Image (cartoon, rainbow, N blue to C red; front, side, top):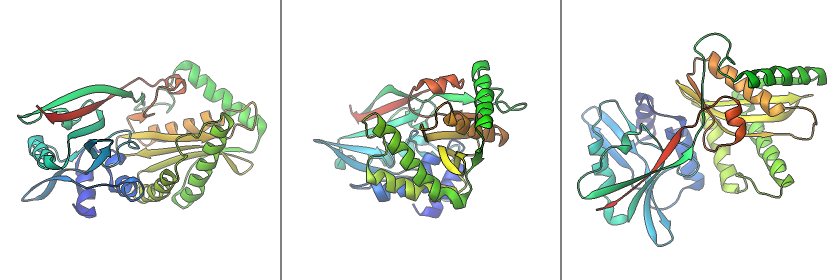
Length: 312
């Protein structure tokens, strides 16, 4: 699968998210990948109609065939044009079975085409695993109309407090600012977790390198959405988000806690949620984790599925 084919297939799949895009997966493989690649591809006379980038992960004594991007992609999935026979893709996935012991497909949404039946001779074991809260956005009216009454009042109150402090600005990040904002995100995240004696999710230099590669690539493809709050010009809160034509996603956030009496994180999320609604997105995905703040915004839980496929 060439990069051009990958992008064409991504654009042709109405279920595709940024986590299946070349911008995300190429950076992931460069900085976090390893092992034998066994990509599954289905073609017809018109070209590539379905694909799932895969590799063999040596997990102790078990050889697992897993999607490229697994572990750092909140939604894993295949790409397929509408009407594609998924049995053909399963045939390609399972055709290399001499190289692995089982197929592990984590973080599948419940409507994933990969959750259909598997070919004879194989058994699928499905388990609901992660919770990814989702906020439905209004089609008209105030962008914050979807929020709970309590959260709407909190946003208004926090903006008034920021106004009294002075020098506070909310903004969406332009492409030329991405590098600066990503580095600030890393620093804010490190400082916050050092306070509680924990490393946080960005402790690994390979993960930092991955995001340094993915963020500008996503921005160039129009898939990156970042909001920041500045106080006297300095960035004090960041939400690192993604977007496609249907929904926006909050991937990771960080805030400077050194200014007491302020809720800069609330302002950064409000900025991004308002922008998502204004852009016509139907949903705002808070992604993995059941942190209380996600439900305070009015998000509802959605589960993802972990599928393991073995010989019967």
